Image (tube, rainbow, N blue to C red; front, side, top):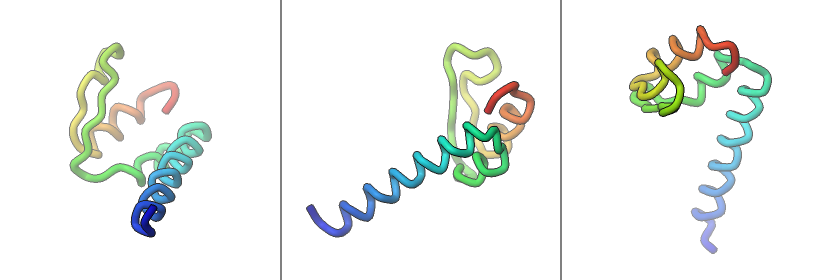
Length: 68
């Protein structure tokens, strides 16, 4: 295992933990801080959330959701 691999793994775990924590707290600003401007996200079985592109579109969709 290289130092780069270990650093990458720690960064990925940190991102997952930060995202999970923000979602559980329903903290939309904290959730959105983790997304890139050119991100893509979708939930195929949820009307209106099937395919979203861009941070602004995702924030708008999640802002009206009952849960983040």
